[in-house]
Image (cartoon, rainbow, N blue to C red; front, top):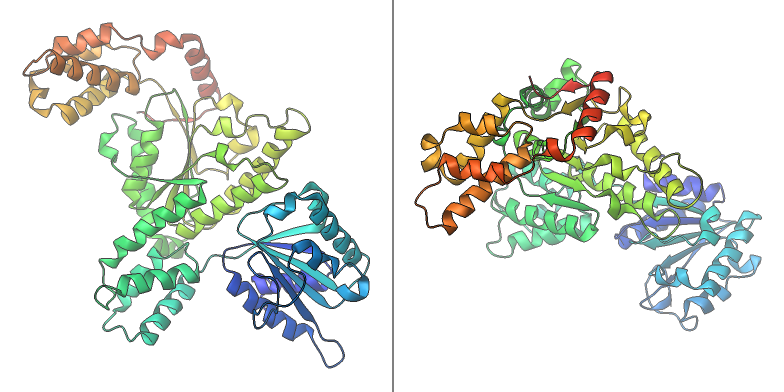
Length: 506
């Protein structure tokens, strides 16, 4: 028995008399199959174990046939039938569709009563199957959360091959099966079979063009999860003006990331990620997008604010779900923006949000330290002084880079990139050197803003082209970041220098 499998964990917890096991999954059929196997393993000639199932659609049903049974239509009446030790003994109680009921005190009280009986020696286990993790505080001490592991590459290939065989799909190459198995990462068996059927619906075949359908559904899956966001990749590393040290570092990581098998054989560790800290508006977020484009993998943005839930354990569950989804979809880049805001309040006191944030931080640190999946984390932060020191230790990130205000040479590149993007026909006529001199202390975002303003003004004034003076006027009408945040920037620069972070620029 593989103890790390869901079945292995379930058997261990049932033998150890864990009262309530909360399985966070959509795949009810798969859970039923696992429970059926466990019932067979647990039962003997002398002792027979039974499954007692209640779901929100049909009430009390026969576990094996799924036929509706008479009586116990409501959850409360069903639980009432199991309140005595002799009625509960030798039963696995499976409760489905009960997330909304876990806000009702009477239901929670009855489940707690059953959990107490199990804790006192009654040979039983309650299994709650739900896509939403809801844990009332009264049940927190009795509940253990398990999650259905995502399918690995070989399991996905087996599902695809079985579908091909059953449906007699002609001429599917091993190469296409490999590509499909990577594209299907993160999907459940139910979703994979549905998408395979949809792919074959028009012509009865599986072809390379079906990969786009799978990619579109993957975007839908991420949207429905509501925690991660898939970002379109329009920016490349050539869109970054300056930051040559950081760009060179990404190029070296690209070689490892695109040849992970060979790199691992050579003895290279799996890349963990990078923390890019420093001045706002100087290309930190742009680097996350460019890195994903360079690695040719999806870019997932994690909004830490979306993780916070109202129930005990819900926030941690959301983080586990986000990490599991990212790892299932990997290879990918996971972008965490403004990391210092995500973990604000660490160590600030007890109770409430501070405790939740501390637990989230601990879970995140453990994952960063131990992760082996090709999920490359790009974390960005404006103010590193607000980050817990544990996050900055070696082993969390492969490297930490500091991004400061662009130099003269970098501002020249940034002006060239933004003018060329909008008015390439005017670039040769513009005195970029004059723009560089006039824009000392401007960030990359400042420069993009003045170019956009100049182009818009020229269009509004019916000019046939933009000229140097148009951009100079926009510069003169703009307060640079160094003016607005002078003291904060000086303090930040000293902090990064004292910590010996690598400068992203040469």
